[in-house]
Amino acid sequence: MNAKNYAATRRYEYGPELSIRVGSTDLCRGISPAKSKTVIATVEEISRLRQQMVVNILAIGECLNELRASLGSERFAHFMRAVLPTIGISRATGYRWMNLADKLTLVFPNSFVRRHLLTLTDGRGILAKPTKHGNGDSSIVALTPAAQVALAALPPAPKEQQGRIECEHWVTQFIKTIGKVRSEARTPGRDRTKHQQAIILSYKRFVACYGLQAAEDLCGELDKVLNELAEGRAHHKALPALMLPQQ
Image (cartoon, rainbow, N blue to C red; front, top):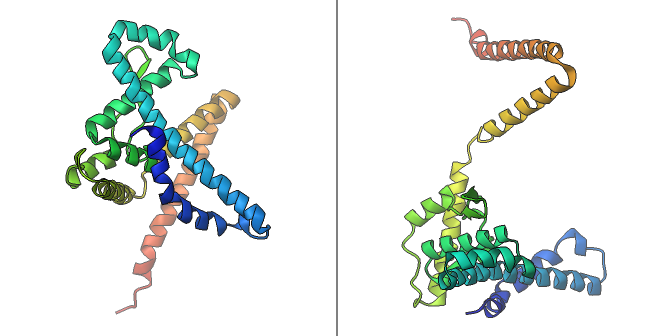
């Protein structure tokens, strides 16, 4: 099934539900029915084009992989340098799409499952951020930890010859399982490292701007704040004991 036909088969899933969701927003309240209809039609068209774009990215990656197998590594590298940029796709983007197609084909051999999954998610929650390797032209695409857990928890994806309904059901369950895993993994303090790094970066900028002496003074002030917080916490912990009735 080519990208155009596949995208066309997916329209029915998004049309009525999307129309209701958009029509009920504040944007469509207080404007004429004709303008509201225009808003809904525009959103539906953009959504359709986005779905088609995602499927096309996967299709391009698959085409490039097939071309590499046909030309061999040396001639294909020349194609990526000299030809691909002339049609509006950078060499790095081409390699990234190839790795995306490689990874998804390896994990999800069923082409319908692959395209349906990518269309519904854009790869969010399924594919980790690509990491550079080698000469920087290519990148490694990996599954997120949540996607790995979901794959292990569910039965294998349907085979190529199985029906569309079975494939859609499996994809739905896969996405739901990923959401459940990610929800369970959300714990207080998960952004601690990020916030800590942000504070350190701000401190370095403070030092660069105001000098070491000002930085030492700031550390002294922060130490006082920390002591006050510690004393306040100790005070609150002691309150229940002080409020107990006397025997």
